[in-house]
Image (tube, rainbow, N blue to C red):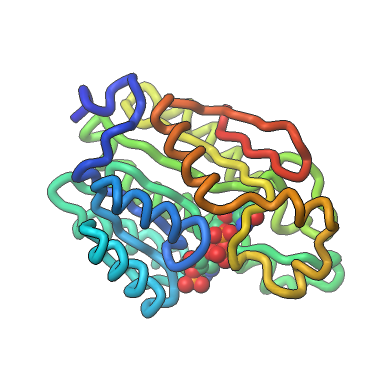
Length: 254
Ligand SMILES: NC(=O)c1ccc[n+]([C@@H]2O[C@H](COP(=O)([O-])OP(=O)(O)OC[C@H]3O[C@@H](n4cnc5c(N)ncnc54)[C@H](OP(=O)(O)O)[C@@H]3O)[C@@H](O)[C@H]2O)c1
């Protein structure tokens, strides 16, 4: 297995155990469906069980394998347990690839942002990634093989107005991913950080779209385009890729 993944990058997804958080919608759903088609065995984590079942059914109908783990990732202990459950469901390989993707944002001034929501958003966007990583990393280190993907945001790299708490949660994800990478690369675990710009998903509700500058709306990227870039980055063992446009900077770690 180390040989197949090895130093050459991840290109063969057949039979691979993959855990995708936020698999009920948007980027996570598109990634899970694509990986299912590529032959991976996917565990989907999010809150809305019915939506997870819908995605899992579609993966099954396309000939793939998928498991559902319903969980509110705002609670770090529950996030850890979801990682443990996915490790069990994806036996015998366990979680070979973890995609920390679940998250949400918002657009408002800090003084209008309830502290409780800042706390919850930090837990979902950042702490849940730490908790799930802690749950699956021991297996990866034991096997000396694994990939951990963090879907952060361009907001974690450049100042984005009306998004201060969201931007901070994504900056935390990026700092964590880079430091973790130094720690685990020597143990066979590769870390990839992804900083999408503006991707066409339900992340943007009608109010967000109404407020969005026309230039950003025009720069919106289809979700399948991002998924393809992530797969390519894993295939080429990338840490960093950056397309330097403020409206669509997609950087794939260092
Ligand atoms: N779309 C963009 O332009 C863009 C740009 C930069 C970064 N991103 C990042 O990409 C990631 C995916 O976003 P998206 O665009 O695909 O948005 P989305 O369609 O709204 O998907 C968000 C996913 O996160 C899950 N989630 C949210 N809160 C959760 C919680 N408390 N517990 C468990 N799961 C939770 C949602 O599932 P449930 O509702 O079922 O729980 C859903 O599956 C996010 O981290 C986002 O910050 C998106």
